[in-house]
Length: 102
Image 1: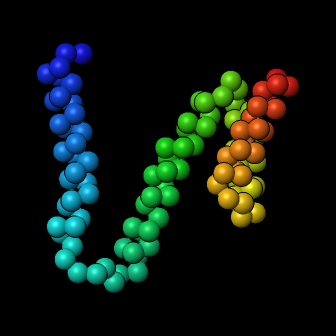
Image 2 (image 1 turned 90 degrees about the horizontal axis):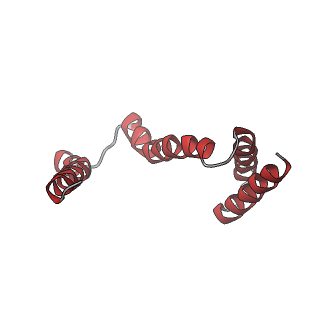
């Protein structure tokens, strides 16, 4: 890829990222009081994070079985209220142990 194409892509990406963040601030001048919109905006980060993480879980390991084992362990630990570091470490260990047996 030449420099001209790279900087064009970089400019488009930076512009779209800036617009997504700046337009709501410019368009909404007052506090949002609608319960539906507030709850919708509250859950957007979780939905985006889930949409990016779940496909990566199934493609990051050597097999789908170990990926499922890690996902199940992560969900169980997070439902039990464990912190992020504990969930990540134990899930990685579950994937590693599952891969050893496969």
